[in-house]
Amino acid sequence: DENLDRAYAALADLQTRYYPALDIYDFRDYQKSLSDNEAALTIIFISIEIIVFILCLFSLITSMSTNILEQTKEIAVLRAMGLTRSKIIRIYMTEAFVLVLSSALFGVFIGIAVSWVMAIQRVLFTQIPIRISFPWKELLIVFAGAIISAIVSTYMPAKRIVKNQIAQIIRMG
Image (cartoon, rainbow, N blue to C red; front, side):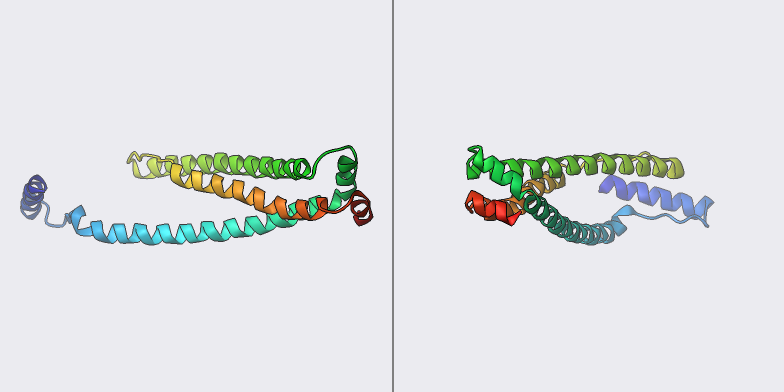
């Protein structure tokens, strides 16, 4: 801080002597305001992420429930062939997991591409190189949420169907 104070004083001296129209700003004066703004933006983005995640969860629950209900005859055939209830549930959970994982990976790749393009545009306009950081913690949270969503969206509808007798499952379809 002492070196920064001396540099600021030297710049201020040069400014008053040679460039009176030039304004000099000390980053330390704006650091608290910038960190407050960053915290507010983080809260806003996390809130948006949660809302989108909940909407996607409901969409996944609806589509997986519909998918499982439409395949009741196939479930009855699988049960008649000797598959256990847990294996049938596992099949549908795996389907949901593959769907969610592929969607998450696709979203990550699109997000990386968009952020890279935006960073390149910013560098072109400002001529200031910026460092692109990857949000690993958020990625792990999203993938964990995706796995939990796959389990939640599939387990209850599949269990509700496979708990019935084979003849009842056929009548459902």
